[in-house]
Image 1 (cartoon, protein in one colour):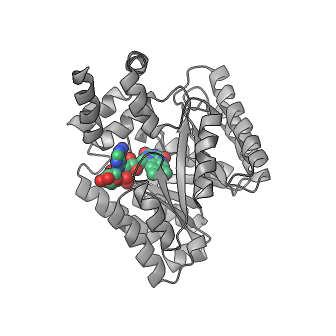
Image 2: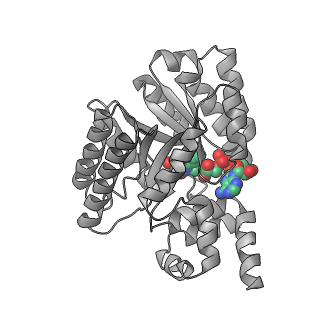
Image 3: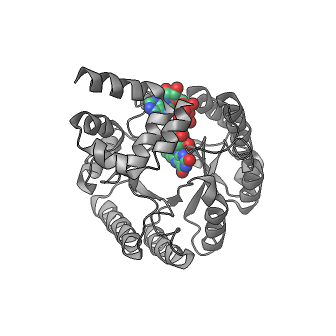
Length: 308
Ligand SMILES: Cc1cc2nc3c(=O)[nH]c(=O)nc-3n(C[C@H](O)[C@H](O)[C@H](O)COP(=O)(O)OP(=O)(O)OC[C@H]3O[C@@H](n4cnc5c(N)ncnc54)[C@H](O)[C@@H]3O)c2cc1C
């Protein structure tokens, strides 16, 4: 119930403007968001790189309303990629298609996406196309399919909570795609998504096994397991070990601000860890989705608000 209510609120941007005025909210937001500027994000990424972590950078924003905003988002990603190269960082971009204009026009979104993919490819890096709510699943996968032949560096996301995901994954496996597996962060109806944590975790486990198989790797698949769920992370590590899949053939991905205590332990097993570092003024939707994942975050916020 609480999760559903928070996910509903995550679509109400006006609330973000009100919340932004509260110093406490800004403090809690900073737990999950590196800052409002790219420099702040790069400072975090540089520190993480010194401890052996890989990173992905996200310029926060989604569902833009004008072509100018969509083009501006693409420009920011191009500047970020130039800066990553200049600073010699092991960092890739992770972006949302509705930030690049998918709600406005597919042609505009594709044009923006191809510019970013082009620049990432020139740098020899992958570029992750995040998966948004189920209203976008089909269009996101279709766009991914159509750009992939020209941009093998394009990487896509499968959400374990969606009932359709096993079919989508099997198709992507045959293509030898680069695939991030996450649980899924949006409000979805039970016809489309498994409603209980147990079912979502089971689905994640099944899809993880498919991604870490000799057949998938022979097809050229590069899997990324995006989760903070320890049993699932160790399941990936064990399975890779059992199948003698070398650590450079897959990675574990985590979000900035969540379970940093796990980074060193995962790296000690010889595995690659990539942390997704978001920054920007448009933190609201991203932040409320983080609250929805863990009600304790919301209780902390409320307790401190009441204390004044
Ligand atoms: C790198 C990365 C990329 C992602 N990309 C996408 C995407 O493209 N599309 C999409 O729909 N979703 C995406 N997600 C979000 C994902 O779908 C989940 O909503 C999120 O990762 C929480 O699920 P979990 O796998 O960590 O498991 P959970 O079962 O939710 O959590 C496992 C444990 O992790 C910790 N934890 C999890 N979330 C929080 C939190 N917010 N605050 C504090 N502790 C927490 C807790 O200890 C919890 O017990 C991404 C996640 C990651 C890590």
